[in-house]
Length: 332
Image (tube, rainbow, N blue to C red; front, side, top):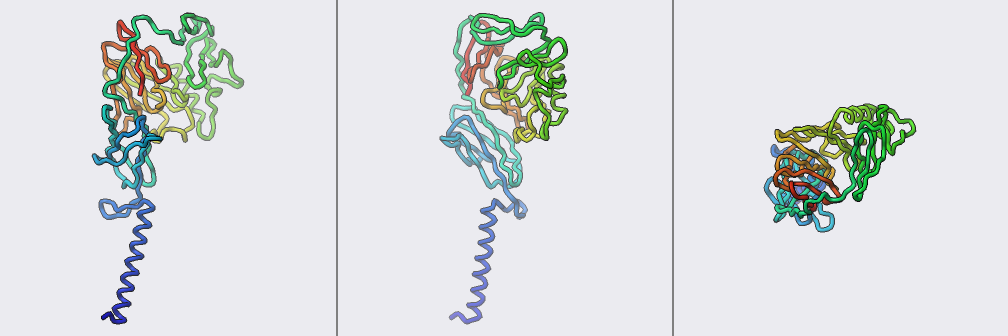
């Protein structure tokens, strides 16, 4: 029989247990977890955006999620702060993997491109495919389209394609930058007509861009025109020219060393629809290259042959030349 004192003790114990459980539930729902040394930690997460549905996401070797049918994404929540091995796999595709540092209250987002283990290359024959491209000879820029050539700009020293605006940036013999063969209002050789300094773009950005354009032999603009990518025989670099707040989450500084390899790098282009990746021609292959080198850099073959060269990128199709044939590859 419970005495009054025992009932009072039982009530206090029950109430205390309820309060403790309620607090624990609240902390759990807010994303707190117990760390390895029994300390309470705020958790983070990893968000995967893939190019494939039904891809399995593994965290430290344990299956966590599968990319959804509609959005091709997967979110792993409530990870205590530390470095995790993230691996994304799908049958008949080359696995994507990286070490990702999870920090409190932050969801680390990564763009994942899965490449089939067998990526077919369709032979196009020995005749050069028709495609639009630009050349410069004796200071004249010409456009080649549908087997015809037309002069566009004269008195040109160098030029670069601007993919988003579908025009050319020209550096004239008079040491001035132009677009559409006209100098924009207020244009200066510091390229401030192309990049307007603001709260998020300091004045040194157009100045640095000008220096890179004039000093680098191989340099291109990204498809969204937010960065430039440049390379020499053995290294690839990048510089972010857009607003700092729009930089990818993984990128910490505007200037970025992307890749270095003893093999000679022939060409570099941007990967369509995936701004965090490049396509590079080197050695006996064409490779997909992840720009983020921290935690392991995904470097995956798209084509392997003898001495392939990139001819053009048209939408998601890549045309290459590997003597004596031209090939077309549909990029994943």
